[in-house]
Image (tube, rainbow, N blue to C red; front, top):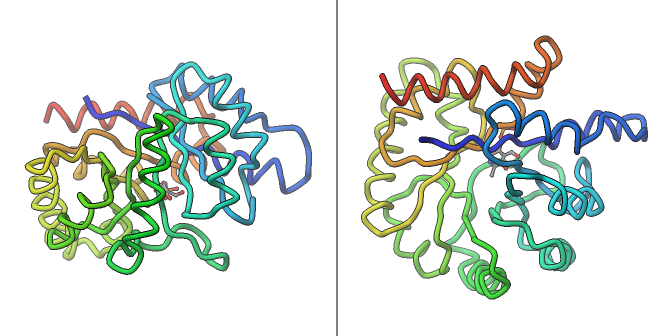
Length: 241
Ligand code: PXP
């Protein structure tokens, strides 16, 4: 069964807009967990624009599933990651001026740094995943880092016109096969929504999806419980089709 990680960063965005204590991340995490979310994803950014380190500490202690922390290779964030010890960390690229994570890690350019971070996190008992573009010719490099999992950036697929999507899905499929042959666990995420998620779920071998913006947006109209439930339902249905 494909696992669903729900990214709750934008609950914090709403909270921070007024500096209030609500909406509560803990309440959100509980609702996610009770309605089909398999774990909680948060991104502690260098500029702390949504999740703060106190949120990370509170959530890692309190959730009943587990935390997947997205973070860039940044010393200050690493310090908090090692103190909070989430179950898994997904290393992502980060630029201050970006609206969201644009593209996957540049492992060619940053191999040494990424490998150092992987080693330090693994030594602390944390599973490490890399957020990458599905480039088959880089799989050897991904293996060198020591990460055990890859999260395929699905942004290109999500933004593609209908007639361009099949080619991108094929690339993701070929990449997934190759990653699995190399014993890497495969996850996917970014830009997935209620309309485009099922095609990704049909790619055999993808074990986990991380979805945030579409679910939190839908929750404005349907409520968080129903929004998570409906996404998980689409995922389950796609798997049996
Ligand atoms: N996976 C990773 C690694 C991300 O950085 C993000 C965005 O924070 C997501 C998944 C979720 O993307 P979206 O909010 O578009 O669903």
